[in-house]
Image (cartoon, rainbow, N blue to C red; front, top):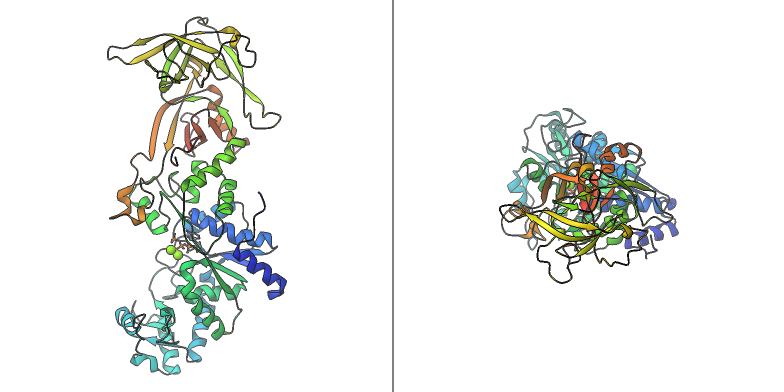
Length: 556
Ligand code: ATP
Ligand code: MG
Ligand code: MG
């Protein structure tokens, strides 16, 4: 890809390398919470963290931020690893915040010993009240004066399971009058009697995000800890804890998260779509998840190029879904094999073509490949399927396909002229009758005839059938999140159209076998868009997903 100027994080990293900070070492981390599948927003963070490390000869840790036992699961861990790898990145180490629970506990004990943390018995409500408001300082309660000895004993009892959920918390003792609400004695440990997907029942107290995240960064000696803008107010606490614990000085930097139109991006909302069966699963091709995009036919390169183009900024905006589609079109145009499929068939009969004859035509696989990308044989015969929309009984001017007396070229084949058509009792056209011109064959045309349009087609007696799934935006409004009511009320009812019996040229019936040798094989159904084989396909029941149409039908 072309040269672009440095983003602000690259500038910071280059400056750190120049001044020899951390000996010029670069270590980033990608820290997902395993409570759902990754989405395109995570891809931005992955490309940024792994991209930086790659560019500056550093490393990236994959750290599962698993401090919330109730919502986390190994299914999510596995999917996250698959997605990061698929995007083309390798982590230096696979780590889990839960592996640091002992160390984090010791850090908490150290804070207590320094009289920088205390056990508070107040209810969540009273703690919130005691913090005051942004314009009014908070007020210390009676627990704030507990002695170090008392706090040590209570915290140990919390760990030992003596108290119920919510009965006590451990708070950092910082400043109840701080202009930063996050510094007003934040909670750093809570009681939660719950089974953890890795530590089992060993713990009934769990560190809060703010106490686990920066400490994990320091334990791993992360040099650049990159997160999204909403963590700016947490930075002061991040630095305070590192300073008080006298641990490795990781630094936090914030960038704008990715927002996209016509979709939602929070795992909590995506989970609702899955659990309420609005979609077929996390990997439904309409989902903005990485697994959904993969199943839809997006390539890792298209997603990386997209992330590179949107860049890294300090201000949030909304990126149009069309931009992602631009990058997949660009990629697939170069690599996909051209094939013919008819999605809404009507029969065309070539009255001057012999009844039992088949002519095998040469069809190039991809004209965009320099020097050619080989070809396949396409059978041509007297009866063809064409798209219903390619015929009009009373065509307007400039309709370059078929209508009474009109001529059009059949892709890879001949020019035909429409002479007649047949209707059923209801007035629906059922058959189109044409004459073909033997001297107009593609590549050898000596007919002198002019046909402005070219149509795709499939020979009736050679056609195979397949299921074709056409996808559209999952939501019918740009920002389902900011509409009145529930975001699920704005789901696009036409986001999935299933065509059970599309006709495909015979070569396409080999699409599944093709995948064993060429797992990345994609197809352009001529004039219909880019398609991939769906994972639920079998040789008897072939299913194609439309990744994207050939042209952008939305931003006009
Ligand atoms: P969600 O709100 O969708 O559940 P999250 O931030 O809670 O996402 P995490 O698993 O905690 O999800 O995120 C892992 C990393 O991915 C974090 O560093 C987070 O900042 C980053 N990330 C999450 N969403 C986006 C986004 N939309 N754009 C850029 N980075 C993101
Ligand atoms: Mg989270
Ligand atoms: Mg979140």
